[in-house]
Image (cartoon, rainbow, N blue to C red; front, side, top):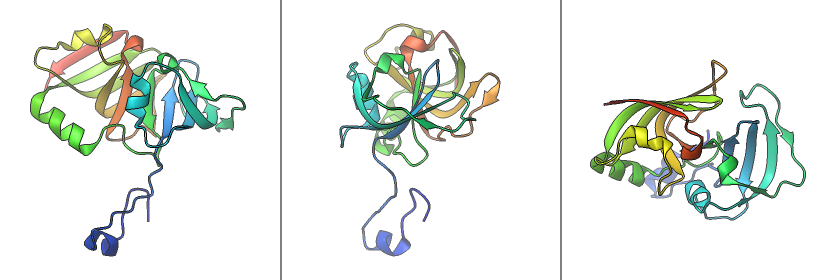
Length: 185
């Protein structure tokens, strides 16, 4: 079975088993890519990042932003400062950063915008859901949330589209957004 798939027999019995690894994520910074696991079990990545304090991590690997280099183990790194992270996303076998219930609720009560965000050295395109009173240009300002979810994302670095970007959602650090182009959907 591939990650996320369940056995039809188990599903029919009301048992859902996935092969997703809770807390496995990728953080893109201006200096490179970190692949790590949250040290504290049972905590969602988005919740850990929004605490705005260093998050404990295990099994940290590091490589280039474009995903082209082999990830190498990083010895001694036990925490990551969320302010250093430009983009956070689940690893290929990690859990989504936004639950289906959250996504459905946001779709009901928020306005959808097609956006292109300049998050140096990255360009992020996708969909942002904002309250009716919010303007997309406000994404460059500090807000109550440090990270904004971008749905159906495409991430580019140096003109190269990252192939391991999840299809559902990534989190973009508002402190790293330098420019916003948006149109209402």
